[in-house]
Amino acid sequence: MVSSPPSRRTVLGLAGVAAGSLAGCSREAGQHDAAAPSSDSRPAASAPAPGAPTRASSGATAGSTPTASPAGGPDITHGPRTVDAVALTFHGDGPESIVRATIEVLKKARAEVTVLAIGRWLAANPDLAARIRDAGHELGNHTWSHRTMPRLDTATVRVEVDRAAAELDRLTGSPGRWFRPSGTPSSTPAIRAAAVRAGYGACLGYDVDPLDYTDPGPDAIVRALARSVRPGSIVSLHLGHPGTLAALPAVLAHLHDRGLAPVTASRLLSA
Figure 1 (spheres, rainbow, N blue to C red):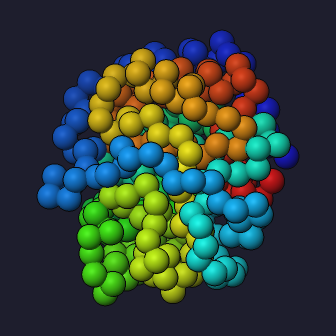
Figure 2: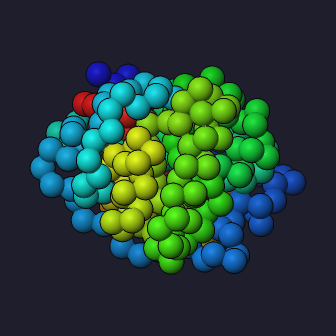
């Protein structure tokens, strides 16, 4: 069972928290690697075959070690459409100030999310792993250096997956339950094989992409999300972008109005 979201008044009151935290934040620090442009703007992958989310999910709690290594099948792009919940997933990168402010907004809204962290970002900011987990969120793997993975050879793909998994394990005692490839909205056979080899199984995709990493402004982010989100959706968002932080209170208010609880990927996929 997912917990009841807070009142709309409480959620909307968080807008001041988000707006007040933006001063001095670096927009550039949260952007994608300029040497490896992201292709996240492409349409999301098609939904997995019936039963795929249940098969690929162990129901693990935040930060737990995977208990199984299911065969890598179609990417998991959403959870059950019968549950009144959505998974908010954040690509983990960006300045600590925005991360802290985002955690505060989520805390006051009693929202739990999944942060798919870039390994070298965690290595440079090791205290953030504990901060994210202590706030009730779960950590996953978004590669070591956020390269465009479909362009990489098999050996390099493995390094990107394995090195980030090792960093997560060093910092938290677990490689995390979920892996999402970088630079692509969907995996390839080589990426899936590397994920299975590292113990993740099917890759975690998404069915809602408001393109927040393009910095379209908070209103545009909220409108794009509102058009696409449904029960069971997995939403792709990005830490490190002031516009995403500014949009978050309105995103949470919209989900509340529709009776959709924001939960971690593990909770959604074990429903």
